Image 1 (cartoon, helix red, strand yellow):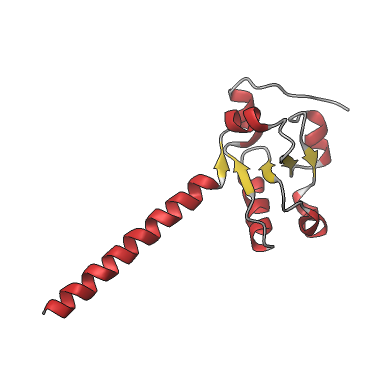
Image 2 (spheres, one colour):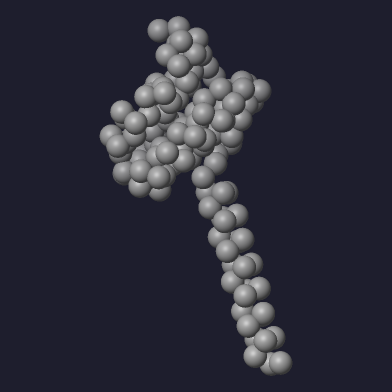
Length: 131
């Protein structure tokens, strides 16, 4: 009976640790628009907007580069490993996809901006439009 209790205790401990690790990973892979705004000019940060060129031209974060999601296989392996890479889109969906693809390609330095440009605008953060 003691052995069974010990095994159950160990399994519960491992299970809780796995949940904590997953929560930490989730917390580490998303940034709020305000956090992106505060980090946007740092030399070790790269902001990639994965929307279409037309969406990007209409409005964008000044420091962002446009790399459309539909071309991700062409540019994902060219991302720098020595920079924090923040993906942005309209709502956070496409940028989340880009982040997962980058992680699968071996990049552990990637982040998704929560809520995308919709949230950025709601925060009243500066936007550049046109060329």
